[in-house]
Structure formats: C-alpha cells, structure tokens
Amino acid sequence: MAGRIKASPLARRIARERGIELAGIQGTGPDGRIVAEDVERGAASPAASAEPPAGVETEKLSSMRRTIARRLTEAWAIPAFQLTVSADMTRAQELVAQLRERATEGRRRSRSPIS
Image (tube, rainbow, N blue to C red; front, top):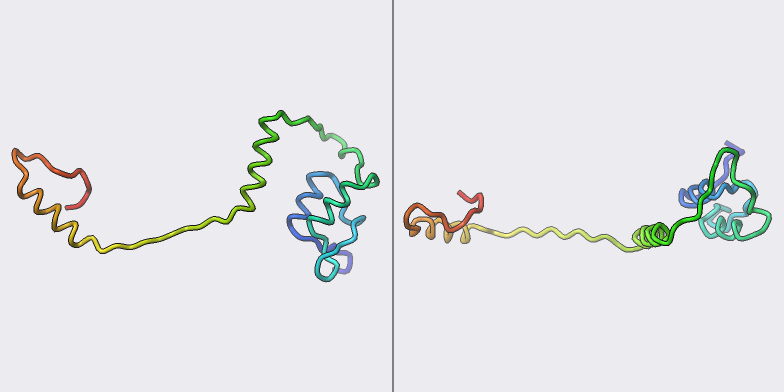
C-alpha cells in the first residue's frame, strides 16, 4: 500500500486520542517512521491543535484522575519481573508426617494439604 503512513503503535494511539492527523507529521524514526516524540512535537505546534472531532466532548480531569493517569503511564516504564523457584520438599513432608504421628487426641499440627 503506497498511501500507508508508517507510525509506531504508540504514536498512532497518541494521535488518535488527541485528534491529530498523522499525515501532517514528519517522522524522525527509522525509514521516516512516525514515533511518539514526533506526535508530541506535532501536538505542541499551534497548527496541530485543532478542535476535537464532532460529537466528542472534552472534560478537564480532576486532580485524582490526573494522578491516576500519570501513575498508569509511569507503570508502563517500570520493568516487570517474574521469579520462579522450585524446592525439594521431600524432607519437609517427612517432618510433617512425623509430627502428625506424634500428635495427641487426633489434632493436626498443620492445616496444609500435605498428605
């Protein structure tokens, strides 16, 4: 498609949210791709700040909503880590079994699902 505009997904989302046409923005990314910074720069220029599309109402954010939006945006920049650890619980299961044998009056020492 010759008329396709090369833009990153983030740049497309920002442009859609702000009602900015990507066709009017010069891309600075690889192969002239439009990146988020280009859209931000375009949004700051007076030519790009047009009226919202018809039927769209804009409302000022409350300070709480502004804080929520800022923190959600910051959360995207924080790396997420996942750690998986495995352990041999054979000895622990033997110990639980010994404790259960010593238990008096039928009371269990542990409520764990270990049988």
